[in-house]
Length: 305
Image (cartoon, rainbow, N blue to C red):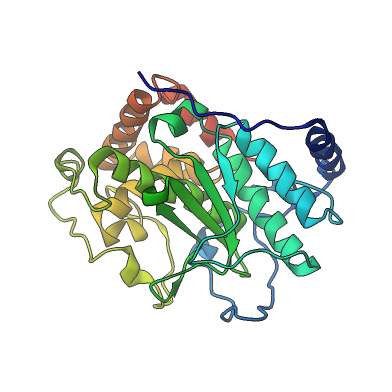
């Protein structure tokens, strides 16, 4: 029998801060495609977002707090919202830099939180418990093996890591990555391997499909991700490996703006429809029925946060 993860106590001042910041943020919205920004300090030059060509401009993300919110207030708000999901915020990881209390970093953290928090709140908390996910790390300028990354799974610490890299980024694309990396975490928990070659999944591909050498080979190449480039493939990035194919399929199904497109494509593509149904069955089982067909239909119908 699985035990419920403990919920960290939230004191009365924290609740007051949360309510005050959320009320102040109600009238503020961040556009789905962020304006260009300039990097500072140790940051690399702004990267070109690989999902820029696929950014659903109709999707908007509400700011989590008023612009003048302090770093402490933003952290308190975040910790309260994650605690409701039985998750704990982490603010430091070796691969990333810690947000500091200046205006630039507060705005960067706000941008990251505006996407990651509602993305995680789409899930039933029981799925996090089943997958033994305990920590959400939120940092800036994440670098893995010399490559700048926006997110990464870290099952060895029961964590997912999400980063603001000071880029001109499509925010809906960042949500897609939020779900994509969680899927990698789930794959590792389920099969003990990030690169498990699932025979059931591979059997859904037409004979013409050939995978590449892994997602890491796309970095630093000016790669541009496009949707549904061929039968059975939800995106160009899905070609980089079966693990990326599965993570992309799930990420597109979970993200407003992208999920609507998937529903259109599966109507004419029987192979992609089979992968779509594969994901629904898998998550229905993993979530004890909470994430079935109706659940994924709701993601496809959502266009605003």
